Image 1 (tube, rainbow, N blue to C red):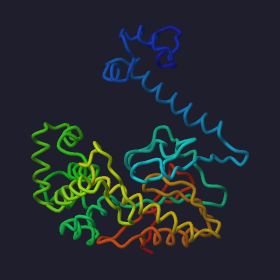
Image 2 (tube, rainbow, N blue to C red; image 1 turned 90 degrees about the vertical axis):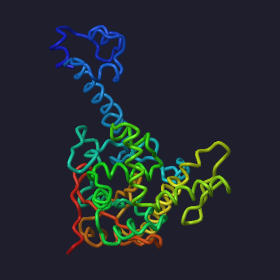
Image 3 (cartoon, rainbow, N blue to C red; image 1 turned 60 degrees about the vertical axis):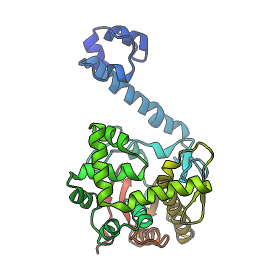
Image 4 (cartoon, rainbow, N blue to C red; image 1 turned 180 degrees about the vertical axis):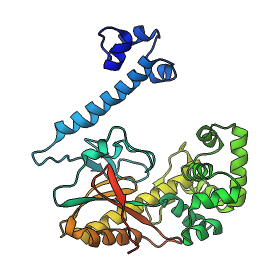
Length: 335
């Protein structure tokens, strides 16, 4: 606010859209309107709104929900998503902002608010490229199977295979697994549709098992009105549903089943210990662990997560450790 006030030269209410529109000389202060403006006031306003939202939603919002024991209790829903993944409400702790990758930092530091009790550490365990591993299992494609069995990085291997940069290969891999096509890839890479379509055609030519699975899943869903996960759970389709996403539904649903099995197996393994499973966020599990149990529980959790199911490729779980959720370091399992 002080930065904006210095440029404006008078007091005003930064929460008033009418006042801010007048100051900026625009009809609307929506992000898509002022986001590209070459104005220090517009840029400061966007920052102000982001911080104000973080303050009310997280900082003050968390303080208002704290119990006497300095805990926040959310509700995890078993049937809140189509895929079968758990969803979270009151508050939604699955939606805490995080950096896009480990090289970036979270400017709002919201995850730093989740701290380990005295004498404890936090564990964060998540599955490594689990959707793509399940894609390899279902397709049986030799390239995917051999890459994962050799412990190689799939995105780098894909980049070498199709002659593209690793980041492009990564976008393609995840675009495919989430049911996207040339339109989606065109938007993600900011390239013409025809170029995106050509890239995908080359990709499928090199990894033919994916397109075969895609068509088989869509045909099965249209014929029988469902697809079946590896556990036997069915994802049903009503008339008019998007069966072209059946392969993506199969994989996302299969990942959800892996996570549910992992949660159940870990709960049994740590039930009578002082280690607690506190939260599940998509493919990640959060634990608080007594410092004296760190080594033992790290291996127990990793082994349990990697033992779920019987798949054609290894299922890999990576672990991080720290005093708070925002600052964690990888756990070294090589020793």
